[in-house]
Length: 246
Image 1 (cartoon, rainbow, N blue to C red):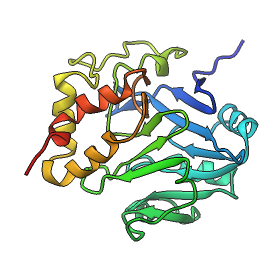
Image 2 (image 1 turned 45 degrees about the vertical axis):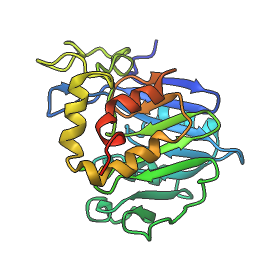
Image 3 (image 1 turned 30 degrees about the horizontal axis):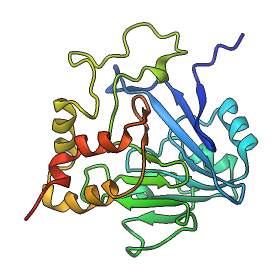
Image 4 (image 1 turned 135 degrees about the horizontal axis):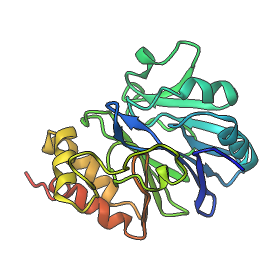
């Protein structure tokens, strides 16, 4: 019987998630998630956030050869070296600032915010990207058009992280201490968004651009997947920025 706390799920055809427990600060249950997408040429686009353990790596190899490894914001890089080592042929793409944090043996093929605006890395015909350069964590939002799925790190949370703790043997609750749940439709999430995206005017164009994408599902790194009403979740969590008018 497996004692692994990893939950692997095909959320939509060709879209797999790798969910597991993750504590932050250091007792807050955030949960962690990586996402792998099979592209039309059979290769894999990977948002790498969780541990690169053998169970994860074996499933990714089963899906296909990894062509892209994405680090979606300035905070999601701790496991990048292990994924880059496991898939040495892949292009590693991060954000400005990763070159100062990530071990030197990881060679970046691109950095959002450092490369010229509009730079493309090869997957854009299937997956759109929007860099939130004014967001505190320097996040990139992605949208896989065929599956109508948005993938992101810290732009939207959906707590508690039930799926990410569903196989965990850790004691305690998955609810955020003293707060409970923080979903994208809650007032608390609006406050959280404001704390990370303080400048409404500067962040508004990026929030509006994402709102124009056609998606119904959001795969966050932290918290449960938003399934079926992903667009509504984005419009709610980022309402102040989407509705901003000068």
